[in-house]
Length: 139
Image (cartoon, rainbow, N blue to C red):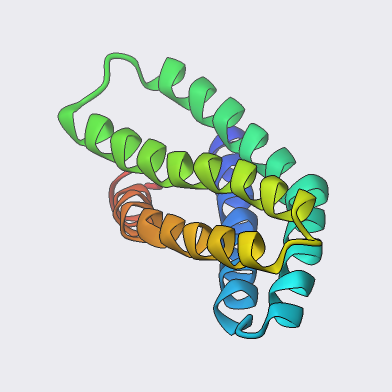
């Protein structure tokens, strides 16, 4: 495997672990106090780890697309699924920041917490992209 593919794969593995940890934090937050802690820690994780990883994934992915041109239909399916998964994450990030700003308003925090959980809709798209990436493009 060439270094660019390897870097892309490492960034994706790191991101998936971070996203899974955040999802567990969100799922385990039930009370207003737990949602408050989730708001604080999820924002920190986004700022320090997740946003930089997403940028690295997009950059290495773009370079891989350029090097694989012309793309096959399977490439388009993989890229589409990956972009939908990342899109859900890019919807989640502003919600996390909005919730952090609303820490003093438990009702608003709880509402935003529900919206953040809904961004888990990206998980099946991630699974499709990961499967296609591992099964067909890492040879």
